[in-house]
Image 1: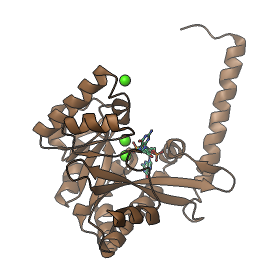
Image 2 (image 1 turned 45 degrees about the vertical axis):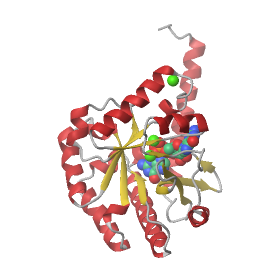
Image 3 (image 1 turned 90 degrees about the horizontal axis):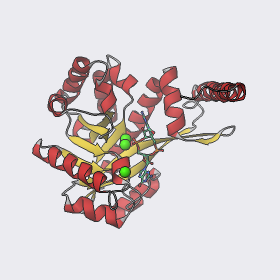
Image 4 (image 1 turned 180 degrees about the vertical axis):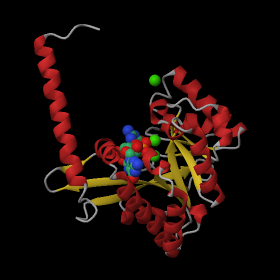
Length: 276
Ligand code: C2E
Ligand code: CA
Ligand code: CA
Ligand code: CA
């Protein structure tokens, strides 16, 4: 590592200060995001490669304010996590998504599984399984229509705690998937103990799938391993027909990505389902 000169040091400090200020600004604004009606949920279709039909939707949070404009979840989710605001915000998203799934079922649209992202902090709160069950009950959605997306990181600190929580969710009929799979070094033994039913292959592996032999090998290995464990696979970030062809050839179960559709507001998603 090179020793930073005085100039570099000052520059570094200014950048850090700027980051801290932005963080504070986001956290302060996020506090009021729910009550000021600044949050929206968009839904990205998940498509079965066998049937070609939409079989699921991932709920993705959107936030914009008059002062800040649209802020990416890549930026505000970490701020929400660090401030603890992810607990009320995450619960808001969960309820919206569950309610939306119920609305589409009631409208007679083909049933689909609603996938909701769960932050590690939400996952570790002791009453998570009962809170989720409560929301399903209040919104009248059977648990098999819900899927919680967890990252491999949730189990890092406390594997036994994670297994307990996952067992409780599983016993309540709620499905769980591992998001960004391949980036967190999950072991096979873990996957068996965790009551997971689906692996979401991270977009970083899918991106160069048609040109990069290593990525091809990784994706193929994940799909084969998942199959032998009886797990469903979905590839994220599928943008091209070349990626799609490779995934189909490898017997990947589902795809999600711009090739089929970007995340949509509820009205647009419904229009897409009705066209099917
Ligand atoms: P993620 O869970 O891995 O979500 C997938 C991201 O990839 C989404 O970004 C989605 O819009 C984007 N995407 C989908 N298809 C494509 C594609 O074909 N190409 C490319 N390049 N990107 C694609 P988004 O919506 O900006 O969300 C970013 C991250 O923010 C999510 O990554 C997730 O970690 C987090 N996030 C979003 N909503 C929530 C939420 O409600 N709760 C929590 N805890 N995290 C959330
Ligand atoms: Ca996700
Ligand atoms: Ca992901
Ligand atoms: Ca690569």
